[in-house]
Amino acid sequence: MSWTGRRRASAVVAVCAAALAAGLVVRAHVVVPLTVGSSSMEPALSSGDTVLVTRWAPDAADLERGDLVVFVDPVERHRTLKRVVGLPGEELVILDGVLHVDGRAVREPWLPDEALDGYFSRTFEIPPGRVFVLGDNRGNSIDSRDYGSIGAVDLTGRVLARVWPPGRLAQGGGP
Image (spheres, rainbow, N blue to C red):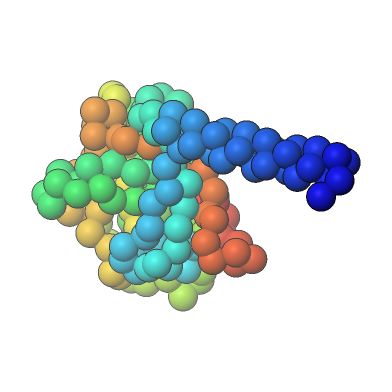
């Protein structure tokens, strides 16, 4: 191999090593992949999809309606992914399948029309430092309707993006 060829090969190896090191640093300190384990977030995310989740817990005050968060399920004690639909200090209820916050119907662009059903829920008041989370697949989701609002201490990360499968985009406020 010529001097130029060896130099080029060394440069390629150096670039690959730097990219690998950068990827390891990002994974160790910034994001972690998470494989969705249920169909409760369909159609935005399906079981088996992989998303990137921040390694730091978001503060409840920094979240917006529609954000996808990962938290420790208060019943099963495992990591769970759901969508934030209620913020600290709000009052919410589901009437005829439509989410109402503080007395007003809220548009949920991530939900297909067929996901709306005649479901009614009791009225929930969300305390400071807590959020209300629901699965997009409302008929097949155990969520805040069952175990109440989620405290900031249980939040473990925010979903940044879907990485697998490639090419399939989430609807609405998802990755």
